[in-house]
Amino acid sequence: MSVLIDPYEEAKKQLRETVELLGLGEDVYEALAVPERLVQVRIPVRMDDGTVKTFIGWRSQHNSALGPYKGGIRYHPDTTANEVIALSMWMTWKCSLAGLPYGGGKGGVRVDPKKLSIKELERLSRGYFAAISEIVGEDLDIPAPDVYTNPQVMAWYLDEYSKIKRGFYFGVVTGKPVELGGLMTRVISTGLGTAITAKEAAKRVLGGVEGRTVAVQGFGNVGYYAALFLEEMGARVVAVSDSRGGIFNPDGLHIPDVMEFKNKTGTVVGYPKAQRHVSNEEILELKVDVLVPSAIENVITKSNAKNVKAKVISEGANGPTTVEAEKILTEMGVVIVPDILANAGGVIMSHIEWVNNRMGGWITEEEARRKLEERMMNSFNNVWKFWESKLDQKKHNLRAAAYAVAVDRVVKAMKLKGVL
Image (tube, rainbow, N blue to C red; front, side, top):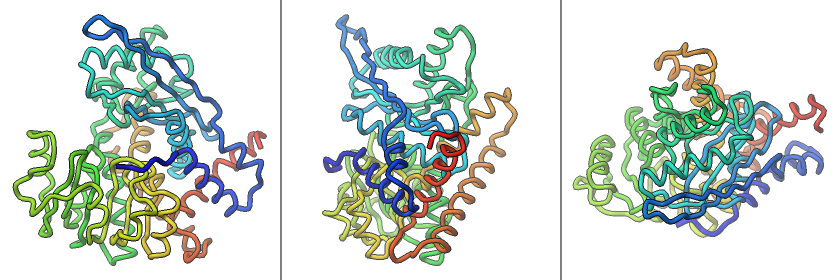
């Protein structure tokens, strides 16, 4: 449903605007527009029928000024090198904005994992991680789950890496099963962070989130927990959708019931307590107070932006709003909490897990969640304060403020190191 827009070109447009806003030179733009390393790997996989199929994967390491590269790995049939580069750049800004000692990285394999058996998926995962094993490590590059990857995939990565390196390196990946050094809070972290930023934005724009209507596009891990926590915060979630379509009830949906239905049927479509069905396109244009796009990139474009009725958008997905669409929405007075701020809960919790692994297991789940909530609140407040005090709010939106804070920190680190 997303339009054919090159995410890397979008990422470079955002960088260009930020460099100009900060009054930095062309040398800074050129240093940040290209990843430090892009690796493409070939992954031959023995299929269950005995044939060998070859898959292509990538790992982009965008910037290491602040620390080792950090970013997820996605399995998707439409994954491209440019998508992976763009996502690694966004991870640089996301880690910087959250105050983490990480640079940005991202990985991807062009595959439809739904068409693989569990054994084929394991062989693919082990093959991919073996292929990139020389460029990842606890102090070099720390992958994590992303689209269609999960704690089980991370467990295979960890085991394959440990065999290759002949040792135990629990911090080489995050988002692991609890039995292998993961934290349960990691599962809820991205959705919780998205809900927190939506609540804080609604407090400033709408007077609060209590009683406000919410639509969530994407009912995977991020969308589900964002909806669940917003419901717990007092909002009325009236619409949700997954890849097959969406449901709507003006009186509100009970999110745990919707997820129970989806777990049984594979989709939210057909949920008996919904008033009507809505498409993934329609859900973006519903008359709601808060919109949470949590599916894929480039779903809000210049062709549908003018039809968006929400006053607050909290981006659970990476890059769901195009540059052109954002200009339209900004002129309409819509406040967009950008992805590098809204969905940073995942990488913040990954950092907590990584530190916990390196320290030998010292934190409780309660402490982990408290630290996550504190850092999300601090990040949001810092960006909002910068927006109010340093920028003309009529000319520059919240994304401009977030990017300015994030890019400035990276540039300062590069200058201190003598890279710039």
